Length: 410
Image (tube, rainbow, N blue to C red):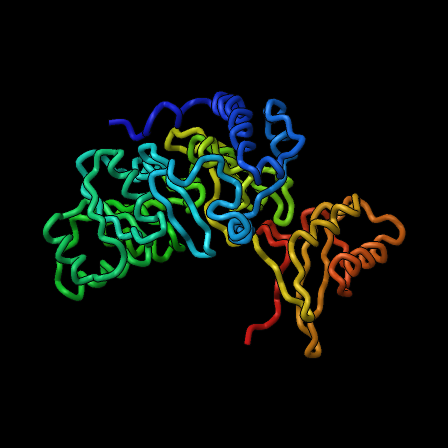
């Protein structure tokens, strides 16, 4: 039985790119039937947005802004052209952010990730993500059933009953957070319950560090990660190659410099921005707030879509300095005002019981008066004074940080 979900996963990158951008104009036209997108994209000709450069000219929609937008126009902030009653399920996530679920089978696009993790027809899946108001439980549930698996809708917690269910049904697979998988294994050890039936797992929703990966592997469980959000569904998934995470089909993913909508070069860490192709719930350049980087080449597993390194931190690096909030967007504005700047990092420190700021700038060339000019711009943009340090190209770390808060904790 083939490892791949369908032929889309192994088509050429050029074929995939052509298909995505051939479908994008229709998606934009559908999105502009929603009042908020009509306003955001006023003057845009959907037929002209047919490549990545054109897409990058459209405004970013930040996930962090969704709660305020939705409060102004309940429930979806005027960003969804379809009526709430036309969806399958309606959820809320912390924020609060209200999210609809489509009516299609595997509406969140998670089946590819489960199949890549080895889930197959006839498997019994213990699904421990919550089914209460948030979509996590249903994301896994619908994907597993789309693959022909039976699902135990266990949800999180209640380990005593989980032990009873495992003993009765002998599930072959687990879906949930890596932390709760560890809790279940430890609970089984403490109670003398045999859960060796669980051989495969898909984990999401929390960090899965190498130490925990090794611990789970030692227990005979082959666990793969899913990278998903409640807004989009599954963005990327780990495969048997264990070499980065493969982007999901039917999504256009960009990696941009935090605080901007500008795509970064391949390999540079930046913020994940996603455009989906769902006309009922369109997401146009949604910045989800996570950092990652593109890996070169294709996965050894045979899937040809772009690979990313996985979750590398949060892009929201806002810092409060001397009582004033300084945001990545402000650092980006400083770079926009000085063409000599290639890359910036604002380092926040503490000296003599006072906050300090140092703007470290990689530059192409240093004209006369450059430091003074950038110092003035820094003060104008942030309303705070700080030092400017000039660095050669490539001197700053490739970690996606625009604001590095190095003040001691406590």
